[in-house]
Length: 257
Image (tube, rainbow, N blue to C red; front, side, top):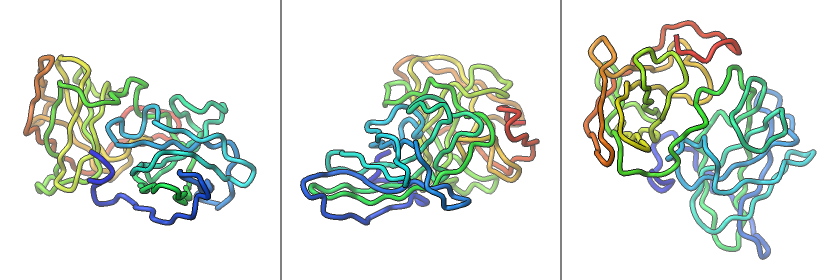
């Protein structure tokens, strides 16, 4: 999925200024709750959502200054923009409890030649460990599972994603995650190789499922194993999602139960 075909719920930021010879993105990063500028945050620029904005980005800023300001030179194009601050000070790597991240993960801007897009970002503290493994498929592959995320009533779920597990327990970090579902609930789950997987679906990437959040498992009552060969594409997989009713323990558990 490209920024040009972004699903509903994506926030488009169109403000820009004369770059005076530069082309890129500038802005300010603040803490959502207090509005306070945050120093030492990094802004990541992605060309698409194949990695769910979790893997290494195509461009990354220097750390924000005392005023929370950042600046990134990028070629003209349309990009997703997110901010993160790891308390370790590292610019990359998985997020941990207490780190800061952009809650709204689909802020998009179009950068034009000779102009600087102005994108201000809010971050919030991470309440539980990051939900994904480091191994995110960051490109399109020939091996993929595609389908739709829908509610119990059959309505499309927009901005969710499917997850693949190698075991039926599904009470741990998923092995792989799909692209964000579009306006009709369609998703594509790219895999690095063939194998057998159990599938689930949810909305938010950065924290544990919360009560009421849409959550689903592929199968009629019990998880259904999906086997795929290398180079194969399986289509028309439908995962029905309903409000999550499990227990949420901020900062204590990564498991969706």
